[in-house]
Image 1 (cartoon, rainbow, N blue to C red):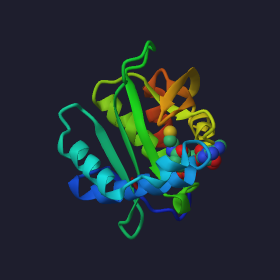
Image 2 (tube, rainbow, N blue to C red):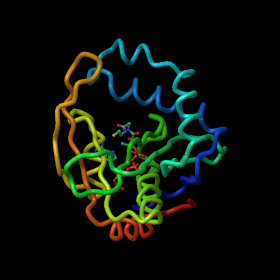
Image 3 (cartoon, helix red, strand yellow):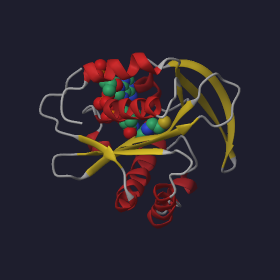
Length: 190
Ligand SMILES: CC(C)(COP(=O)(O)OP(=O)(O)OC[C@H]1O[C@@H](n2cnc3c(N)ncnc32)[C@H](O)[C@@H]1OP(=O)(O)O)[C@@H](O)C(=O)NCCC(=O)NCCS
């Protein structure tokens, strides 16, 4: 689908994006995960420590981690995504999208689709064939992944800060189709 009038640029993240990425992560976690993960975890999120963590990720790309940001027309970073090798699990997927977040007020404008497409393209360029993403079973974002052609491939229960979270994995077994589909769906810059 095209999103007329929405100008956005997807670009590689650099060190100077660490604070903006941390802000988006904290804001979207609080907006999305209230009621899904413990309140004390959400209240304890620290922009400062997230900024430091992202500086480390962006500084050290030797592990092949890919991070892209979506910029709005005023060059403000409104979303980001991060991907790399699939974390060890007994599933036939070689790539994984670790994070994908769009600021609440910018959701529904096509940024998520473009960022996911950018992740798939980058994974393909790095030699990857397939990808998966883990999402909380109670997170409506799972339906975004279904809309993006992901198929439900696994579920698991994960201990997290004193509770057990139900998660599901969506997979794209052949990224070639999705990179092409993304190009056709892209309606503006980026
Ligand atoms: C999930 C998220 C990344 C999607 O990004 P977005 O920019 O809002 O989504 P888009 O506008 O690109 O939507 C693309 C398509 O997915 C559909 N979609 C998006 N969110 C959806 C949802 N919750 N349920 C069903 N469909 C959804 C849209 O309708 C659209 O379909 P269309 O192009 O056929 O109209 C974003 O909403 C977000 O950051 N949510 C909070 C954080 C989060 O949960 N991230 C995922 C963690 S695993």
